[in-house]
Image (cartoon, helix red, strand yellow):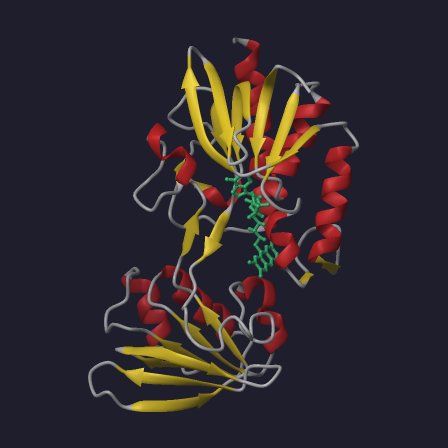
Amino acid sequence: MFYEYDLIIIGAGPAGLTAAIYARRALLKTLILEKTLPGGKLNKTEDVDNYPGFTSIKGPELATKMTEHAKYYEIDWEQGEVTKVEKKNKRFIVKTNEANIFNSKAIIIASGAIENKLKIKGEEELTNLGVSYCAICDGFLFREKVVVVVGGGYSALETVLYMSNIASKVYLVHRRTDFRAGKEIVEKVKNNSKIVIFSNSILDEIVGNQKVEKVIISNLISNEISELSTDAVFPCIGLSPLSNFTHELGICDQQNYIFIRDDCSTLVPGLFAAGDVARNNENKIKQIVTATAEGAIAAQSVIKYLENF
Ligand SMILES: Cc1cc2nc3c(=O)[nH]c(=O)nc-3n(C[C@H](O)[C@H](O)[C@H](O)COP(=O)(O)OP(=O)(O)OC[C@H]3O[C@@H](n4cnc5c(N)ncnc54)[C@H](O)[C@@H]3O)c2cc1C
């Protein structure tokens, strides 16, 4: 354990673990702080079929492989939830919920984001049994099946279009009439014969025994209640970045994503961010491969930053 680290990485998901590999190979004194299991969201993923090098691999297995790879470089590791990051006289002070305090010259925040939940009956019980928060990941499981997508923003519209190439029918349930997305994508959705739109409607319940079987929706104007038979539900009502502990630093955009430049730097010198918690535009793809890519970029940027420290 060092008194002062060159680099502290917050979060040991794909972005943080990749950053750790690159940082340790450049011999930076590096500490990873992780609040739960290393591997991040990989631990919640059944099959990963789109990460190069693995035709198909279980999420937790990929998590173990990435963690072993990072630990191979003898990295310092502490379990704890980061609650605050401060900067004083060019140095960072990182506090955790266990009242531990760590110091470093640079930071990479790789704390990820969490999917917003519908908070309705059946959602939690049927997660991974037809309820999925990632169509790119799980959509393939519903070839020629009927699926429901919930939401009215870009991610929902992209998901319905994506699923229209895979499923036999796609229902889009949206609580308003207008969509929060560009005209072009809205027109594409409206003109797609496989997509059926339920506007002014919300999902009340997801029903199924060991797998999704149907949803109950209600129309907010007519109060009419209907049932739709379906094999899957994809809630696409946004992600919430896990960036609360940075808010005093003023580095987030309006949706609380950490704003990053192409080199993963933030508005605070020495503070970098990577993966799902960070973005420089609203259309960023949030996948393992983009998280690992940014982890590598962030670590290389830290190496450059420390050369002139
Ligand atoms: C169900 C599901 C299936 C998916 N399937 C695929 C797929 O097949 N292919 C694909 O490419 N992508 C998939 N994804 C997306 C992919 O998992 C994410 O894009 C990727 O994990 C993002 O990596 P990350 O390192 O940025 O964040 P995460 O993986 O979320 O890791 C962040 C880590 O930071 C930790 N952390 C958070 N806050 C703190 C704190 N305050 N202090 C300390 N630690 C903290 C978390 O515990 C976590 O371990 C899927 C996502 C889900 C939810």
